[in-house]
Image 1 (cartoon, rainbow, N blue to C red):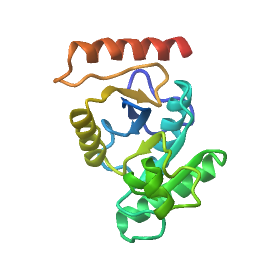
Image 2 (image 1 turned 135 degrees about the horizontal axis):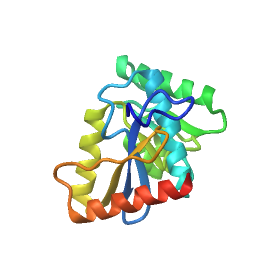
Image 3 (image 1 turned 90 degrees about the horizontal axis):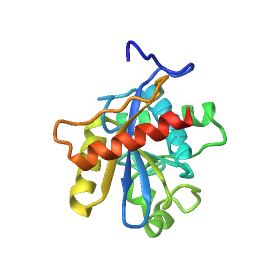
Image 4 (image 1 turned 135 degrees about the vertical axis):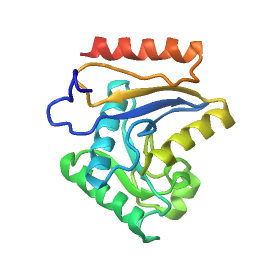
Length: 189
């Protein structure tokens, strides 16, 4: 990060995983870099993650995840997500983004109709932004292990050149997929 530096206008390097589920690909961030982003950083992670999704042909419908949907709950963490959502909307007004929203309301249309019936994102989110690294890392791993989903990443975002990371527990397939991901990023540059 010290050598390659961040892209102009970017202050936060973050990551996404492309979660290849049986019926869709979800982009999940940040699951590998920022332990406890503040609202400003979280808004930038959301914008970068939406851009990453779009670069790979996925329409960005961003869910800013929380333990509360809409105005149903209160608390410091909910307020951080609410503020981050407002900041992201301010910075990128055309972005389809909803937050705070619970995971079930973000991805399940029947739950969305009950909890957030007027949302253009609820029930069909393609980009899922976690409030912190603990939540993001554990959730992507739980989904991967429990559903057999293919997790491609982490793909770092916000740097001047494509750079990606592999965990100590990676498989040969993880290495192969990360090389492909990095090659695609390099070709897009």
